[in-house]
Length: 261
Ligand code: PML
Image (cartoon, rainbow, N blue to C red; front, side, top):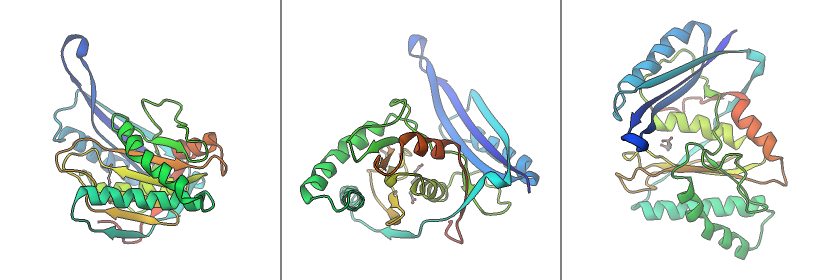
């Protein structure tokens, strides 16, 4: 069967004079069967044209053929949910889980080393707020590995294996479980932490092959437009090039098996 990758991004010019620049409004991507290309494409354009951030000045839709033999099918990570009273409690829980994942990846590194790493996490996360992509952080050396640190690394070419569903609204969870599953299966990836940059969306997650996808129901204050992602990577297990190549080029369909909202 023939598949096609569709990617949409929409932006708007904001600011005056020298301050004038392009601001991202909306983006989406799918991998669909040939017969769904037109419908999915128009749903993407509708999504761009009806976004709450305003009217786009620029919409780019890229459509590429994908050979079935180049697609890897992955089983979605199992999902668990952590309810918390406050976003501070949620963040603490997320940092604790990430600390454990990093500790066990580092062969049960001492508690001091894990505590030292966990202390760095809030600052690392803050550094991701202005980035479009994720930070790729090497737990073996403490170095950042994104070729462009202002942009970060973006996981792309992925979708859920869900037949011919056409949707024009963003569903944070549905998109995140697909991305987190692709990322968790990347060479050398130990874990991921994510906070949405949507000011109205306070749920975030931590994920890894061992932890699964752990939804933490509050990870920031409502109204806060800061969000970001860190991919925690171990350079003793794979090379950064191999990992980035997989994240940015390998086509993945995720078997969500009834997990989607
Ligand atoms: C994003 O907005 O891109 C991040 C979405 C996080 C989804 C968390 C969840 O609902 O499980």
